[in-house]
Image 1: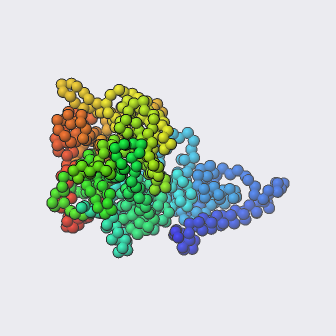
Image 2: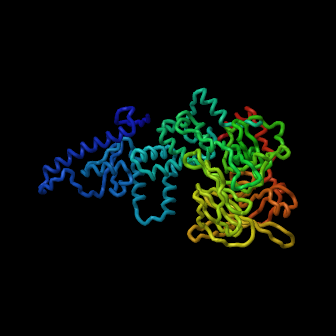
Length: 201
Length: 377
C-alpha cells in the first residue's frame, strides 16, 4: 500500500482514493453551482444534462487556499485535471489539497510552457533543464505533484533528474544528498555488504 | 521536509528505471530499506552474465560449442575530498563467471593481470569507492580449446549482445572470418550469416538498444533482429580500420590509418553521425572525453572522472600496427591535438590508470576507511 500524507484529508489515504475524493468533492461543488446557475438562467432548455460550454481558463486551488489560473489547453497535460474538466465545467476552482502553492505555481508554469506552440526542441530541453535545476527537496515535491496530477512529461523529467543525481555515487553520498537515514534489517545489512564487494580468488 | 525514504514505491521504481547501469541499481538498493524493496535486483541469468552453451553451427567448422563470457569495465575512484592525494582512478575489467568470485583483467586486452600484489586485499570493499560502470564486453570461448591452461580464446572478432525484453532471451552479433556479419538468437540452433556485405565489416556495437555495424569504407548500418540491414551512413573513405564507440550518449566513428612521413606512424580521426544526411562529420576535439579502443570492446570516459589523465585522447590496445609504430607491445595513447601516438608507459598520468593498483586500494584498512568517510563532501 502506498501512502501519501495529506494534511486536510484523513490519514492513511491511498493515491487513488485521494484523487477520487478530490474529484467527488469537486463534482459535488460544481453540480451545486451549475444547478443554481441553471435556475437563474433565462436560456431555453436544450435538455442536455451536462452543458458542454467551452471554458478557456481553469482555476486551481492550492493546499493553503491560494488560487492559480491555467489555460484549459495547458491543464489538459494533466490527466487528472483533464478528467475533472471533462466531468463538469462550472466556475469553481479545483481544490488540490495536497499541493502547496509554491509548487503548484511552478507546475502551472511547466504546463503553460509545454502547451506553447512553435518552441523548438532544443530550447525546450534547455528550459526543462533549468526547471529541475533546484534543490532536491523541491524536486521531491514536483515528483509527487506530477504523479498526483498525472503529467507524464513532468514525471519523466523530474525522475530522470533524480536518477542523474544518483549515478556514480556511493551509498553514503546518496544518503547525504537526499538526507536519508540508512536503516536496514540485520539480514539486509549483510546482503548489502556482500553485494558491495568483490571477492578475488 | 522531503522524506525520500518515504516516497511511494512505484515512484522509487520509476526513478530506478532511469539509472543506466546495473551497478547504479545495486547502489540504489544499498541506500535504505524502502529503496531496496522498490526495485528488484537483476533477476534474469542473461543479465547476470550466466549464459547457456551456444552452438557453433553456421559460424565455425573448427569449434564445437561456445561459452559466452561477459566482462564489465569499471572505473574505480575515491570520492572527492579535500585531500587530493587519493586522486588517481583505476580502470579494471571484471569477470564474474563464477558467482561470488571475481577475476580482474586488463581492461584493454584479453590477458589477465599478472598476479595481484601481495598486499592486495582478498576482498575489495566497494562501499566507499566511486564505481562507474563504463561498458561490457562479450567473448566467445571455444569449449574444446585448451592451450597451455590459458583462457582458451578463439580468435573471434568483437561480439555484441542485446538482452531482449523478456530478460531471458538475447541476441548476439559478431563479425565472421569472412568479413560478414553473423547473428545468433537464444533458442536457435545455429548462427545466421547476413549476406549483405559490399565490403568486409570492421566493427559492431550495441547503441541505444540496436546493433550497428561499420565496414572498412565507413558504410554504417543498423542490423535488425530479422537480419535486415538499414543504411545509417554512406561510405566515405577507402583505407583505415574503423571502430565504433559511444561517448556521452552519442555514437562516434574512429578511423585509424597509417601515415608514412619520416617514419611509419598511426593516426586517428574521429567522426560524429549526422543521421539526416547519413554522413559522418569530423570531430577535431574530444574535449574532456577519452576514448578506449580494445580488442573486444570500446568505451569512453571523462578525464575529470579518470583524474590523472588529460582529455582529448584515444587509448588503443593490442593492435599490430600500433605496436609497429611504437616499437613496443601494449597500449598506445594518441593525443588528438598533436596527432602523436606514444606508448602508455611514457605518459605517467595515464599509465597509473591501469597497473599497478593505486595506493588507496592496498591501504584499505578500516582506519583509512573511517578517514575517508569523514572526508566525503
